[in-house]
Amino acid sequence: INEQAKIKNPVSPGNYTLRVRTTAPLDNGWATSNAYTISQSSSNVSSAAVIPNPSVASEAASYTISFTTGNAGSLAAGESTINLAFPSETTIPNGSLSGITVNGTGANAYANNDTVIITTPVDVDNEGNVNIYCAVGSGLINPAASGSYNISVSTSTETSFVTSDAYNISPAGQLSIT
Image (cartoon, rainbow, N blue to C red; front, top):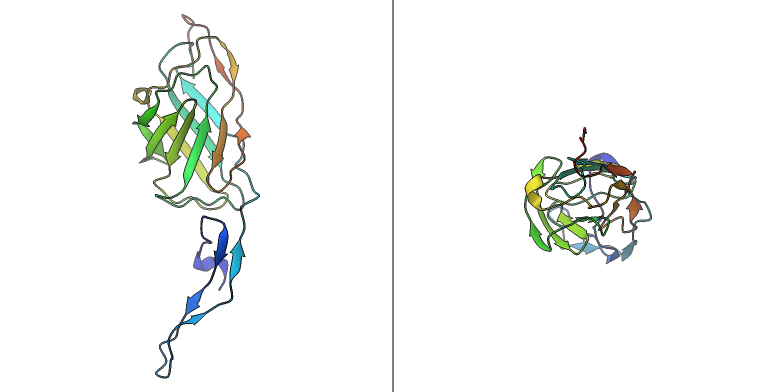
């Protein structure tokens, strides 16, 4: 079976077996393979691009976060999660968040301190593009101090956090163009 069949490995590492059977008249039931192991992915997401809007200190803002999964980083809709670790200076309401989309589709998300955990509502292939949008109404508030900031991104299949490209927050009262 080649990769064009689009059969994906299980999301969770572990030992698995494969069961097959034919439709032949003399078929004696299911045949079970020897156990095989699915290991934890060693690939990582790319460094994310982050765009807050507005990018002014202490303002409620929408955030657009874009990255690419690695060569073993596919995500399964309704199962896989995306983790966004914001700077501690960013205000994020704990609990369920609304106004979050992944690749244009509404997603379930919740926050625990400075980390937003999103259950992806769409399948994402290995080396697939991921675009997350957090609406202004999701409750994110830019840091109070101007400066350069980064978030860190990981997924349930690519568990090492990768630091984003830097994004800038302007002083309060200054014009922000994004």
